[in-house]
Structures are given as C-alpha cells and as structure tokens.
Image (cartoon, rainbow, N blue to C red; front, side, top):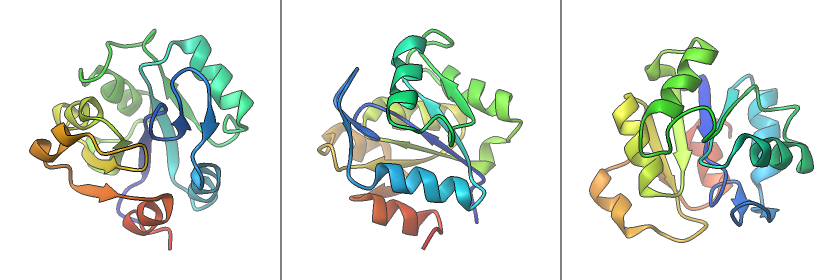
Length: 151
C-alpha cells in the first residue's frame, strides 16, 4: 500500500450533484473497502461544515471517514489549506497522501500541498486538468481501487 491517506473531494467525486444527490456507482463500496483495508480516509470539500456532515450521515459514510475538512475550516480549493489541514489533523506527511478529485481546483490544491493527485473522470472530464499533470487518472471506482492497490 503506497498511500496511507486517501483524501476525497465530495461533489463530482463521490456525490453526483452539489449539495445533495446520489453517490456515484461504486463510491460506497470503495470507501467501505478502503477503510476495511486500513486506509485512513478524509474529505476535503468546498461544501460548508453542515452540508458535509449531512452528506456523510445521509449516505452512511460517517463510520468510514475519520477526518472531514470543509469550506468553514479552511480556504476554498485551489488553496492548499484544506489538504494541509487534513495532513495536520491526521499526522500524515504529504508523501503518504493521495488527493482524489474531479476538478482542476482539486488537482491544483494537491500540487500546492505537495500531495499526489488522482483525477477522476466519471462526472465528466475537466479539460483544464490535462495541463496540470495529475499523477493518476481514473475512469471508474474500479480503476481507482486498482491504482491505490485495493485489487
């Protein structure tokens, strides 16, 4: 297991919608299996704290996610503050972490925090990401599981 900490964006990565919606197919299983395999899981979302807690509870993810950082806790991405706060709260160095997100702001935040980045494309492909050279790209949660060594 190369990464010990998986930092996930919410809207467009786990959630099909912004403040409310359904989980993408495979999202719940990915989070559940990653947790069971010993990965530490965190969220870094531009949602507010209330929306983030509501999201985690409504979808049953609160039992798997150890750390959740919202826009109420740090500056919006692409600022690295959310990711840096996750690292601080978990005690992991940047080299242990992988930021998983769908947008250019997720990838920019990861780069600025010195964290590896994975661009996910199941919500649609953000063409601005190509110029940012994320370490990985995943087209499905199965791809993502393989990339982080879960399969």
